[in-house]
Length: 257
Ligand code: NDP
Ligand code: 8X3
Image (cartoon, rainbow, N blue to C red; front, side, top):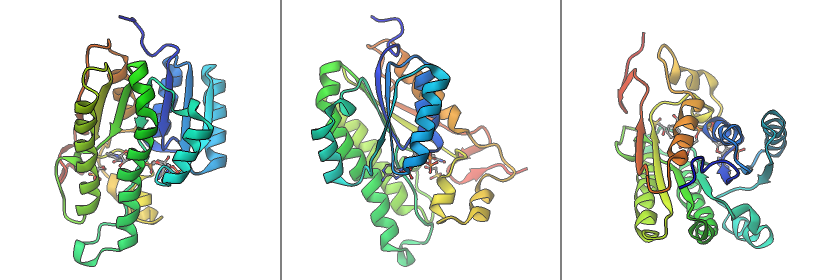
């Protein structure tokens, strides 16, 4: 059993231009990964971060500009650059929430974007990488959420996508059983990132209020949990991990001081 399975490993992190994905990509670089492929849509930001992580950790980091929800783009990339998907660890992190309107008043475009990114995007990237992950006895880490276990008002569709992520983690785990591939569903509560700004379409005051007067998780807290789940010996699979801030007891119970 390798003592440090992350040293020299090849890692693909989607949604690496911000938040949990950015912290995770950097944490893998710091842990000695051999080659980290980082995916996002905002090209200058992605290139800048990749260069910074490569510099700071003497790591090999390749930026990959990709919309994970664009099936043809994912298939084209897999055809033209199969090396991007030839990894030991795939972190399916790209995802988002849009809106908190009730179902009877919600915007269909918001729904489409959540389903397209959180469900379809995860599927397209996983399908491209999984045969190679099987050959490498690799590891799939999916970013679920506490919203994938519990539902809150105004969150029906976002929660449905994260329930789907949890089901997919379980389904992939069943399908690869016996191959040595590990599948982990990471399920955080409140994490202060750009998540709420995206959810509220750029309304920063509304986004800030989500994290006000409480102590949410940081992106680095979640990144540390992800790297830890991958760093254990190959016969140990952390199937699911729920991470709440201490000030949050459930999806709807947050202490504000
Ligand atoms: P951020 O908004 O900070 O980061 C989201 C990342 O996803 C960005 O890098 C964004 O990059 C990328 N992304 C979004 N859509 C696409 C796409 N179509 N193709 C490629 N990349 C995309 O949010 P978080 O870091 O908080 O969220 C990361 C994951 O964690 C999500 O799956 C989210 O659902 C989950 N999560 C978040 C929690 C929280 O409270 N923050 C709690 C539980 C789970 P770009 O725009 O450049 O493409
Ligand atoms: C993000 C956490 O509670 O805002 O997945 O849905 S929550």
